[in-house]
Length: 330
Image (tube, rainbow, N blue to C red):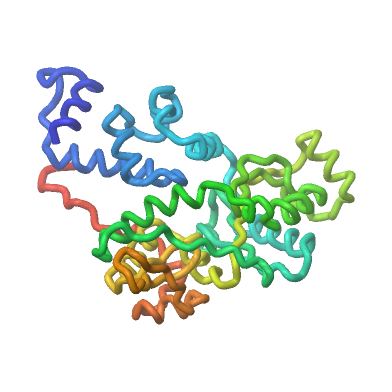
């Protein structure tokens, strides 16, 4: 608790100048800040804790401090700059996906995920998950470094994130970047590219007009900055990974943490690419990950022995227990 006390005094003045504050206030204050910071995509509790230790009191502090911004990765800084974009509503998200469905070949299947699928009325990102039958990219998790299933999940997740951020030749040939985004840009949906990596694209789109314009008219409108703009995230996965990806990108963070721990307790590993079981090899230290045949949400829930949770009930961040305030603490 001492670092938070030091931080509080450095921000607010000396102890003699401050009213008496209980330890519970400091705990709740840090928890509130952590909750606020972890609403930012790509910022977890560990990064939030580091920012708080360095004087961050919330998103406003983070945006205003070059020192704090330097602690973020390029992707985290990019996502921070998009916070001021107008939020989309459900009908706008539906119109964007309908436009995509008309613009792309019929072999693409797509689903709105993220906050939309959890029932939110408004949200920063319109998130669309794509798949098509001939897209077979399914990277395996990194080999475990420890034998304990609980520790295994933590160690794999750290190394897996590193490996998935490195673009392979197959990722560079992803249909998302070769076909999907070029067609959507030509048709006048995509107005600005923000980030492209692996099988993920992020950018700004111009909402389709109620009265359809020609491609030339739409492109002229974008140049003139006419129309309504929203942020869009597109991901593409293999059909084998679709169920796991739907779970991962529907969220929320607390729900994903909970269901991954359920898998961990069964000696399994769940990520956005599938549900995996480690197969020991003939020699010690050898082995491989085998994907369990659970390619839909229903199959994954059934394999984990847990009842299906409807998407609109996966807002677990709202029901995570918080420390109870002591009597007399407002």
